[in-house]
Image (cartoon, rainbow, N blue to C red):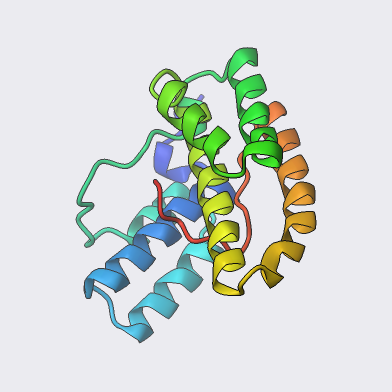
Length: 171
């Protein structure tokens, strides 16, 4: 039986997202121009294997080591429950609940930390919209409840979730 080269393994959307984030960061740093960013994002979105995906960022030195993928450390039932609670805490506390989870549980579990950072970024974005629109954006809170429910279910089931239209202030 032939041994599989890790670069031959097929990639998922969850593996493409950090690469696209890194490309956008490189663009913000001035390492890529508009055309290169567009081309590389297209290549990342259509990459089939890890080797294809690695080729997209081969010449971009990462300023910090990338976070380990979720699959590298087993996610426990407690982690999934805490991830669900992180998103649910935004119902009542807006950004305070996710911040507390980030500070307390984020050090113990990378899975919980990522969910807490995502929920915190989302709640801060919504709060900023409400402040900028002088309260008119408060209508947005009905949508946040639905998104927090979907994110909580994703967290409980061991999946990743990225809120749409969110400023990623906390990583």
